[in-house]
Length: 470
Image (cartoon, rainbow, N blue to C red; front, side):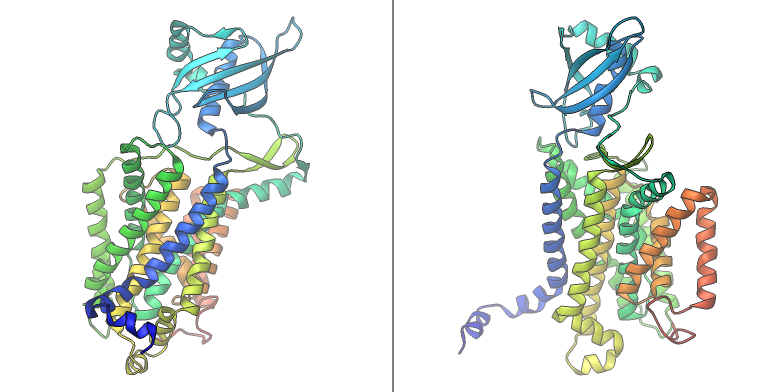
């Protein structure tokens, strides 16, 4: 006997049957966790928080009444949870003064109190407790104080480009997270439809489940006294993947796996009921009030400029777009180079022939549902990381647009779903940039109808003029 055979003899039969169910999900979780770790390690070099920097800049006009403020540099302060702002104060009847302010905050990271000022010092010394209270109560908490931010440095060291190119580039950079979210959700549709020929309309709600799980995971970390964004997002990622996979596998098993019919309509109606169940379930579990995480890693990085217009990119945008990209590449690798992928492709091409070759169809369906749910949960985690939160009914629009992306790319084609997500994200971005934004969604639905008339099989789907019967 070989060593491999000896080891397998000690594995119980039940474990051999159960463990392969979770192999695709575990592989995706490892790759996504690795990606998040790399992205978060790169983000650890960010020394300033954008929200804290805004508060610290907002106090400068109150410290220099009547002066024009020009911020030169913002950096970490000498104490924990502090920032040092160096600036110029130009009074009408005096020479320009070079000054600084050191702001001390109550908390940092994911804490809701991270923007609460608890100490302030200048070159003349620290402010007294009474002066700080009056500054916060009668200036920072007023509309005048909120609008008193003089802004960050202009980034004079970046290159100059034409104004039209700068505006176009900024719109493309802003759309990166939304494109990644659409791509992940449309891939979830493609995974399930490509295998079973059924559409699961609950993936938008599964993204909302992933968002709620992300906030719950981050809240657990905060409950233990740690406010680190690294730990919070890592816990949120694990919770989103697990919650999305479990809810999708269980719900999909009863709405797709157990609804056996030649027509897909009963299963489609069942998934509509599942989506409504998840929506109400989230409303009861997390309450109708959306829970928001404070913004993290939102300090703008200047890239190029056109006059006074600075094209910038935030670290969280890079992280969310990078997670979406690598998760999509990992899924392509999973489908092309693993046993699960070979089984999925064989069953998608010919279920009966694949069954004769030993592919377990029901088990493969559960694996696929779990993997698709994990992708939906991951998209929900990206929504929280980028935008702060998602309401219990907020996943519907994401799911509907992701379904449009999957259809445009070629329903059932995983690369096509990714391409469709990119196309929908780019369409929304360009429409919002140059045309009335209130007509954007209507234009997207009209574009879908036109696309189905001339290319019903999608970009990378079926080559025939009409798709296969569904």
